[in-house]
Structures are given as structure tokens and as C-alpha cells.
Length: 497
Image 1 (cartoon, rainbow, N blue to C red):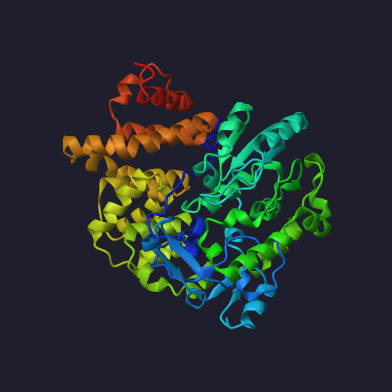
Image 2: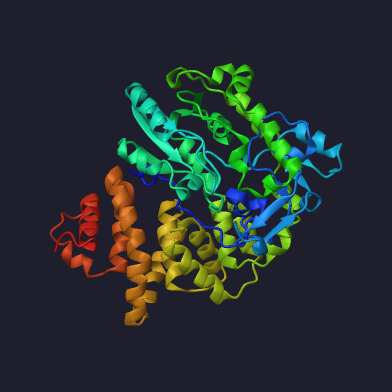
């Protein structure tokens, strides 16, 4: 069974644009999102080398090489971006930076792999004693690298040693009709892993790794260092795969004799006897694996990270221009999401947007449950003498929750008259889409937390918004604020007449 929802993984977000290397697995999109850019700036041919290179790197064209793009099998729809056109090269480690700089690529920068820029999810809970199984993946159109049933038999033989066993299958393997059918036959759960066109791929993989204690695989790949970076105990065990050059015979690079030579060189360096000599501690039974965070940080270039703004400058993105073009509401959302309250306050104090746009932003923020931002905007608008039902409601509710009694009084004083002045249809919309969802959430919270201090004022605000409640609460003992809050919650949810 596929269990992505159980683990709270992000949905797949397909890239609608042509995929250049700088946005493989959503790398450039991650930078844009972190900077608050609402649209991805134009992509360039710049190369941000996205995967770990476990083989020995001694030739510059192992890193800096032509890039073939287009539709597989249709020569007329394929094209090549030359190695020089792909500059600058962003690589993981200083060793690669020096190699390329010394061989005709002076603007190469060591900034770490894209994966090192993904923050851990604070809501992820690592399952004690759990094992994530990651078979080595192939490219689309590539033959299998291992015997699926043999490997599944091995995993079945060790599954009793772990509290839970879950497979992770790369989307290229799914497209090639690999693994899923046999995993289901053996009764294991699985998640779908990274996909080249998935803009959420890096975030998805981080959350997967943050959910398991152990990870084992039948072969080497980026998944090994990514899991290690996330604190997972990593191993290579069981029937190991066999990496052979002919796997690449359907790739455009196979037509180039020099590239075939480099593939053969990589093949020689990726055999398990070579890898075992380099990293013997990887080749252990899965339950014997140990954390390897320092090694993973070194291999991924974790300490070479730069700021997201510095990455944007390397990408040659006009960040300031793009931010200046964003709407008031988008700017508020960005600053609120970043928890930059000082920046939000400064921006709103300097805003020259029309009053109607600021009122509309207040309404939308309340509808999105961004009460903090709505409250700040409402205070500024009310100080300028602007009256509106959404402003009064934001002052009353925000003032209660943020312990600002003066703002509570301002909101509660003006709210009845503003509500009475609304025509029937706008009044119904305000109640159903703005006020009641917010109040219901907080009434339930005070009931769950037995917060009698806050319950009374919330009940009073609820009665202002929905006066017929007063008669329906008549059976509730006077002053029983928590009971009244619970009763209002039942009425609004339709659980009781």
C-alpha cells in the first residue's frame, strides 16, 4: 500500500516548464519559494550539479559536459547544450571547484548539493526501529539493475528485526514498471520517492528520511548521503546490484566515444569491492548501521552552503525587481510565513496601496486564518480612521488572543453597528466565511484547554456576530463560559438543535 499521506508527504507538483538542471527535482523552485518569489524567474542553462558523485572524480568532463535534452527517440526534437554554455557550474565541494577552475571554468562555485538547502520538517516524527528500503533506481528507458524478487526475499527475511519496513521507489522505476507490483505481492508498504519533474521532490525526500531510523539499499547513490545527512543509519546490504556500462546504451551520451570511456571509468569505480574498501562501515547488516552525519555533510558540501539570496545572485535573478512587483497580499503572506513581523509592520506602515486594497487584504487574511497579519493590518487601518466590519472583527478577536484590551474594546464597540448596516447577503457571507470559522476554532481550543479566562470574551464576541445564539444558550447556567463555548461549537457544527 502506498502510504505517502500517512507520512504527511507533500503532493507531487509537476513542473510545467522545460527542465534545466538548475531546477531538477525543484531545486530552483526551492530557492524562489524561500525568497518569497511568486513565480519562478526565467531559467538559464546554468548547471547546479544535483546528485552525489561516489566515483573518483579526476577529469573535468566528469562534471562539466554537454547536456542532451529533448524527446527520447525523436532526433528532430533533441538538442544539446554545450559544456561552456552551461556555465557557471555549481558543485558540491571545494575539490570539484578547484578541478573545474583549473580547466577552463573559472566561475565554478562550491555551494553544496541542492538537497542541503532543505530544512528538516519540525512536525516529522522518526519511527523508532523503522527501516526504509531504497532499491537503486534507473533512468527512464533503462533496464533493471537488480533482481527484484531476490532482493525482496532478503528484506522479508530481516523484516522481523524492525518495527516497520517501508520501501521507497523512484518515479523513474515506476515509469519503467519496476518494483511496485512485486512489493505489493510481498505485502510491504511503500512510498513514491523523487521525480525529476516534481517541484516538491527535495522536500518530499527530506520528510521521508526524517521519518525513519534506518535505511538500507542494494546499491550506491545519492540516497545514501541524503539519508545520512538527515541522521538516518545507513547500510548497503543483501543481494547487491551490479552497475554495468551497457545500462546507458539508450542515452545520448552513449553515442560519444569519449563519454562512453568516462562511463566505463565510473563503472570501474562503482563496483562494490572498490566501494567497500573506501567505506567498509556502509556494508553491514541494516540493524548494525550507525549514524554518519559528519561524513554525509562532507560529501554533500553541507558546509559550503550560501544564502538563498546569494544563490539568486548566482542565478542572475532580478530579485528586487520581482519582489517590487508582488501584490500587497502576496507580500503580507510572504512576510507572515517567514515570521518576519518587524518586516511586515515596516512594509504596512510604508504601504501606499489604496485603502480598498488594504481592506480586501484584511478580509482575505481572515479567510485564510492569518489572524496575526490581519490584526496588524486592521490596527493600522483603524488608526487611520477606516471603518469596516472585517477590521472591527480582526481588532476584537486579535486583541483577545494577543492580550490587547484597548483593541478589543475598539472592535467590540463598533462591530454591532457595522454588522447591522450590512445587507443580508454580505452579512451571511461574512458570518459563514470569516467570523464563524475563526470563532469556532478558538472556542474549541479554549474548551480543549479548559481556558475559562478566554472563554467568556470569546462567547461575548460570538453573541455579537450571531445574536440568535443568546436565546439558544438560555438553558446554559449564567457565567458558565466554558459550557457556553462548547454549546456554541455544537450549534455551529450542527451537532445539536
